[in-house]
Length: 407
Ligand code: SF4
Image 1 (cartoon, helix red, strand yellow):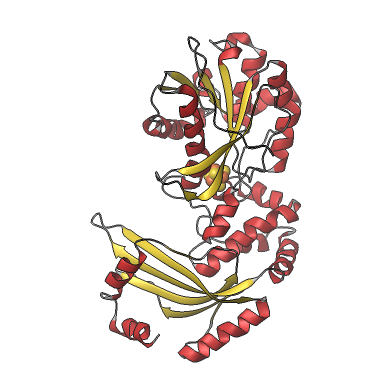
Image 2: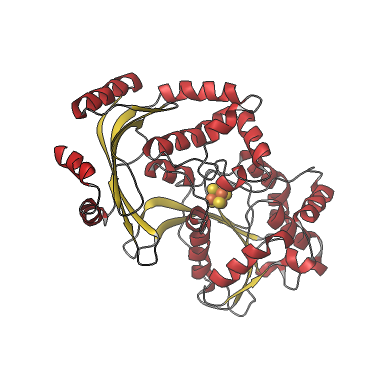
């Protein structure tokens, strides 16, 4: 893959139309209709730029469909097609993220779903899973910020039409997008909503145009939104049908749960639990157990400080360090030794093992545990941790404080 620099600005004196192309049914329907029906748009195709933010975790089937049905049309009409992605977990000095342009061409042939720094890698590095509830931070980081970065470089603050493929069932997301989309010059448009199309209309249109029975909704393979809702059964069945692909979401969830028992890919519930009751699920779990045995493992020391904010919500900071690394059996024995030394039993939670020194309570509180987990995460102590830990520790129950002192 060739990595290239951001972009030259939009040509002067021309209208600027940018489509955030998410690869799913909705934005594909917009794009195909524009390309095949000139009366559906009010601009020249020469002024259109299609921008794709690659998370690195899109379903391969989606990439194949885009390469088969969409990219040939973009080539035929010589539509400028730009694929962008994040390149690192770390922030820039200015506090932003690192991005790159994977490809910028009028003759696209490949949909680079492999991305660069994959969202799943960020989750594995952090020892967590994408979260539901609150803003979709994963999407903001892996898609929104990357798109904004490229679009800002391209438009240079000039007025532009920013096209997003929300359909009639997504009025709430449209309202959020209108509220939060603050780039200078941005004039958002939602053609599917203007046309009065629901997702079913987009899918029917794509069926008519391409013969694809149901164009899939774009999503990461580990997307918690795809796993929590009416599409859960389909998403789980897709994972069962693609066992090699499923190892990554399962590993991500296993590590996240080991480090924090409240985690799980289905809005805090575990995908591993869900799989037990699906045809083919136990077989996938058996394959995953073997996959786990092949990982490097560690005994991790996990500490969390939880304080109450002025608005009543909880503020948390975490410190994650490894005590020792090695094979799974060796690390299981190492955790037993930690347990014996502290005089605290090893707790069993399915395949997970933890030695809890201090349990999390309502804030202010501290959590302190030694846990067995794959060594996929990176050691990290967040900046405010030390101060928050001392503050929280001063306020927790005396018994827990004595345990801390004993350590
Ligand atoms: S598809 Fe799901 S996991 Fe991927 S960025 Fe969007 S919300 Fe996050």
